[in-house]
Length: 239
Image (cartoon, rainbow, N blue to C red; front, side, top):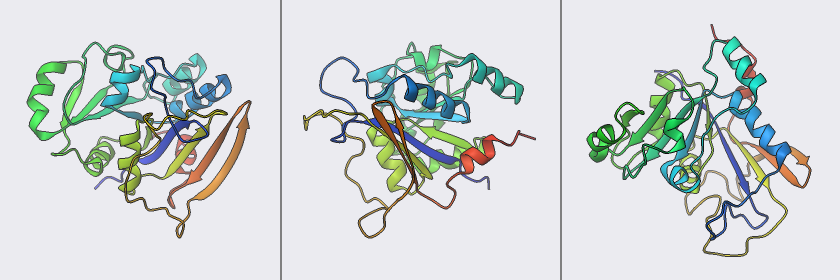
């Protein structure tokens, strides 16, 4: 059986732990230096995963922006952009979303068993639809990605995806960027939701790095004994 991907969770949040506010405009929680850092991490990964809610809310492209990094990926025998992955229980997706229409990399949609046929009709040749169980189980998603040759997976949100990967014990690393302001609205979405997390006051996560970047700060946590393999594998060309 193939090993599950090394899984890195990436998130930006306010000082009080919110990833957005309640307005229609996107809340910027980063700066140019951090955007470039995220682009570098993306370029080292085989796949990027976001929940369907993130696609509906933010319409992300999930592409590597740097021409140099794209060229380096091609030189390693990889596609210019990582594989795009999403998870949905309802199959409420727009085939015209940037997730599906930008970039030449493969797109994978893991959906509930009951919606597989609907999803395949809706997305046609835009994506490969995979049965993720009913309800969708991120353990099954992770195992299937490993079987497809995905060695390094970056999970970029939203909160439900972060919660599920963390509570399932599937996260090896967390990169958390804190923006220098408060949202102050309990109606706004948070980094994670309620759950039984492996880390608590009696079992603390290991803080591996603190990196100021202008007015934001990166907190990098080691969440498993596999921590660091993302970097080690990225430095080793595929056979």
